[in-house]
Image 1: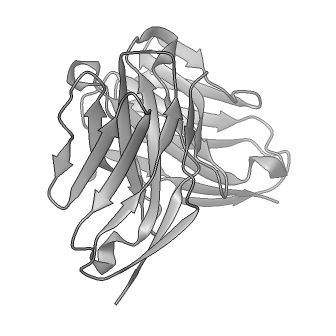
Image 2 (image 1 turned 90 degrees about the vertical axis):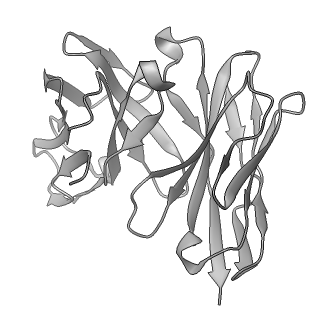
Length: 117
Length: 113
């Protein structure tokens, strides 16, 4: 079974600075998807970014980018120019690309990000 | 308007009561999911449905049942609620033709006394 590990229960960053959240995963598959979701105090789960394992290029969405290291099974999220609105719990998630019964998302336990003014 | 809506947003009930959580979506996705989130944990899958006639158990389906009334509606029921079902419940949808990325509703906070 796949597992997702987020080793940093909490992180903090100064406003306008850059922070990197770590995620590692364990899988024997070669085809899969990785995601970062954000959960602010409103508790809504919001998709931040998605990475397909077959793509070598790291995904980027505005101030959010990932460092995808397939061989190391590492998928870190970098937030540049941090804003107060970035404060939230961030979850890393894995989804198999093989379909069938492996459709579900496997989540890490989350990293709570605090942004200091 | 939100693409995925859940009702109610908050609910307090008593042990032994039957309760239904509802999910509606306007995204036109065939696939729908119910997840549960407990404090300090990620989300765990309860049930999923790939279309109206295809419903499957997830990791933690005991004590829960679901109904897929239409492509746009997927309900979760607790037949006899117990306190350890107190949690945050999320509905999600996905489109397999677009990488199957899952989009979540706002969540329902359920408290069982």
